[in-house]
Amino acid sequence: MINIDTYAYSNRLKTVHPTEKFLFAMITLVVCLTSPALITPLSVLALMAAGIIIKAGIPGRFFVKLMLVPLSFLLLSVLTIAFSVSTSPAGFWLAQNIAGLTVGIRLPDLVTAVHLLIKSLGAVSCLYFLALTTPMTEIISVLSRMRTPVIITELMALIYRFIFVFMEMATTIRRAQSSRLGYVSTKSSFRSMSGLFSALFGKVFLKSRELFDTMEARGYTGEIKVLAKKYPVNLKNYLVLTALEIPLILLNLLGR
Image 1 (cartoon, rainbow, N blue to C red):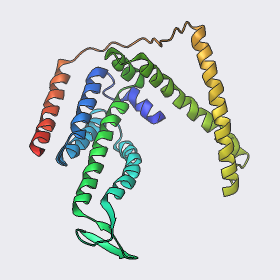
Image 2: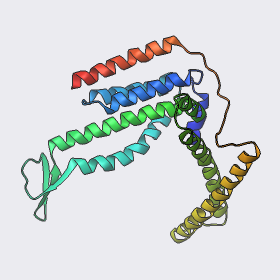
Image 3: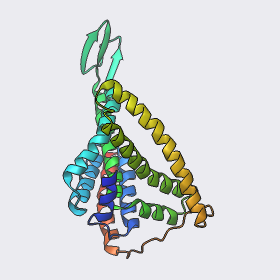
C-alpha cells in the first residue's frame, strides 16, 4: 500500500491532469467489463501494462506482484465455474467418476471461466493504472468536481488516511511482540496475533477520536476542504485517449 502511494506521487505521469487519467481508466474499465469477446480484455490488460510500465516508469516486477494478489482470489472463483458435479457423464469435456458422481469440466463452462478471469484481470489493471499514477487526494478532487456526494468523498479521504495509521500501529505492535519472542512457536503466534488485533482496534478507535477533535479545533463544519493543485489541460492527451478507446469499442462491436 505504501509503495502504491509512493509511485502515485513519483511516476512519469504525475504532471498529467488527473481528470485525463481518471477518464482513461474508467472508460477503459467500462469497455472491458462490457466486452463479449476475449480479445478486448486481453488488449486492455496489455494496454494498461504498457501504460504503467513504459509510460509511467513503474517497475514491471512490482506490477506483476500487484496482479498476483487478485489472481489468487480469482482462480478460486473461476474454478467453481469451470468444474461441475453431475450424476450423468454426458456433456463433459474432461471428467472423473467419484462415488457414482461425475466431476469434471464442460467446455462452455471452461470458456466462461477463462473469459471471466481475463475480464476481471483487465478491469483490475485499469484500477491499478489509476492508483499507481494518481494520488488519492487528486482522485477525490476529480470526484468532487463530478458532483459526487460529499459524504462519499469524505469517507474515502478518512478511510485512506486510516489505512496508513492502521498499518503503522500494526507494525509497531508486531515489532514489540517479536522483540519479546511472541512468534517463536505456533501457539505463541496465535496468542500474539489475537493480542495484536485487540490492541490495534482499541488504539485505532482512540486515534479516530483524536483526529476528529483535531478537525473540530481547526474549524471542521461537516466538509473536508483541501487545496487542489492546478494542472494544464492537454488536448493532445484527449486525442490519444480517443485514439485508444475507439479500437477497443470497435472490438466490442465486432465481438457481438
